[in-house]
Length: 396
Image (cartoon, rainbow, N blue to C red; front, side, top):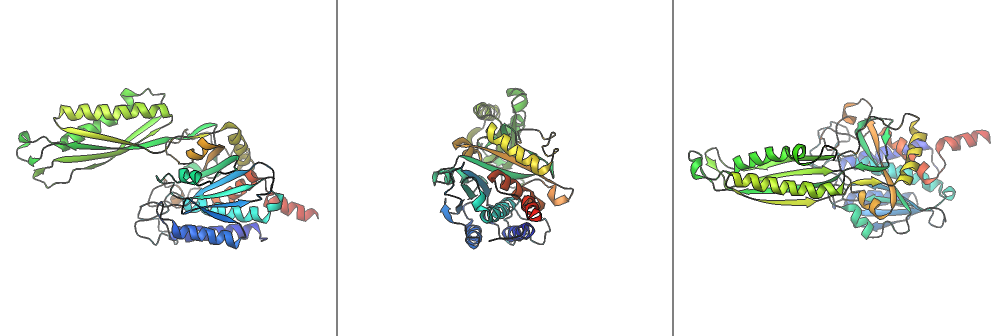
């Protein structure tokens, strides 16, 4: 199905806005999956269900060249949108606040272009529309369900508001951190607020644990180890005159290396338990491992950087972005299974919504990235580019 590039991109932007209006949480992406599959069918691209709400489409499957995979994530977040965009979420308390709608629309644009030029592709291309990236380990399920069957190398990307539009990062080695979450139950003995001496106050103990934990990194880990620990919630519901029996503390941590995970986990356990004992309360610590660090393979990363420079220009690789980014991605599952690389591509073009951090209720994906990244994906797949085709037509 031949189409001009400009029209293809306009269609992808409209598709993105539709997805944005109808967000769905991890493992609930039924309508999103159906929209993706309908679009692939319209384009004449064969697809199959993978991991329930995931979809794998394949192009040029008879070619003998290197088989590459391109991935997009499709799930949204439990956030109430306040971006004010005309295409804002129509589902209360659910929002594409991380740009997965844009990632999906970009891969749809690339799919259309690659299908149009399927005969010129040097090898097979798999298109992975993955559910449940936001903590649901969707990549793991996709792999278990055969998404990487026959694939030699995989590429992915994430938009990043802290990087200027027109720049990107794609290092050899670690590009995004691993993470984990923790929950601490502080059990005391409640009573009347006028008689704290007759109680064992879990609120006071919880406050002390929080302060101690926030000092953990500077005293228990060497400064050369990239790590972040954040306490993100304290719950101790009661009334103004009642000391409760229990307090709950929740938080997350980020690590650049898996060896740091074990050290940090032990720190959380030791500090919480010792602090609780000092306040004569009990505590129980549970640490939940989530995602490992996203670590690029050097050869695919170098190939990816060449494609980025060709599209973004000689200044296209950011020199001012601290790495690794301490956010996390389940793309690490793919990179643990086969070779590949992941890039972070800048969003910030001076528009406020494109400067808001991912997971902000005021965030909006920068639609100008769809054009840029679809071209980059075409380069990675070995397809001809729109400018090259226009030049060839002009000569003939």
